[in-house]
Amino acid sequence: PMPSRVAEAPSLVVLGCRVVDDEPRGALLRRLERARTFAETHPVARVVMSGGKRWNDRSEAQVMAEWWRRHGPEAELLVEDRSLDTLE
Image 1 (cartoon, helix red, strand yellow):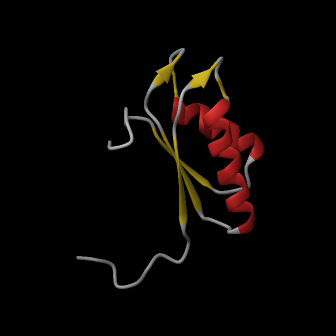
Image 2: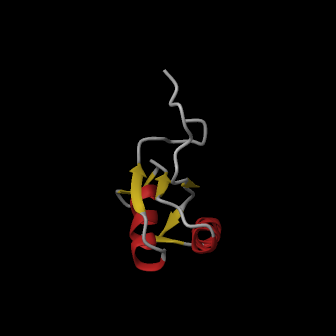
């Protein structure tokens, strides 16, 4: 059955992208910075880092979560590191 009410605390999903030298750069860094700006002005309860592709044995989502812990506002982090493309 569907919940009878909408969740009180919204979530933010950040889609992964190529990781370079174990750090987010280029498009991925822009996505994280944009998500951080949004979360600072629209507080969210959780941030979902999505990206299962591996670069140097680390998933996009793992790299993103590490960046968020250093640079993002406090939020529950969910790491989805199995999807290999946006549809998954």
